[in-house]
Length: 78
Image 1 (cartoon, rainbow, N blue to C red):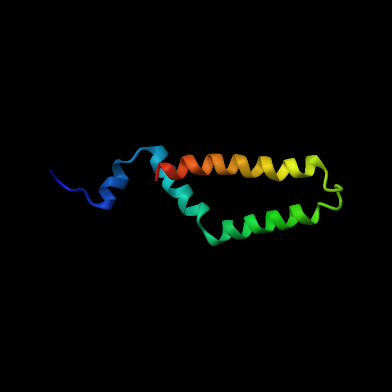
Image 2: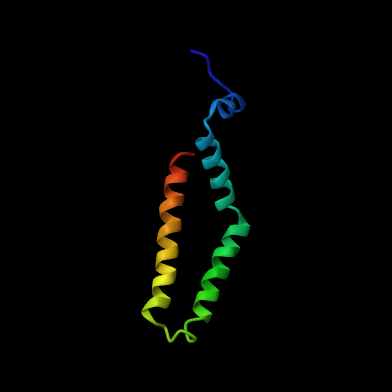
């Protein structure tokens, strides 16, 4: 049985596998981490404006659940 090198495996990969590998690289980058921290800080700062309402809490909860759900499936394919 022949062993394939990384380039030939990547060339044989389907579009979703290539997309999953690319997205895992992007999601793990320092820029996206800084974006996530900035998003949380903006959300925290807006708390007093929205009187720490249920809707204010629901926004961050929904956003993090959706992102986590998608990233888990993408990373599983890498």
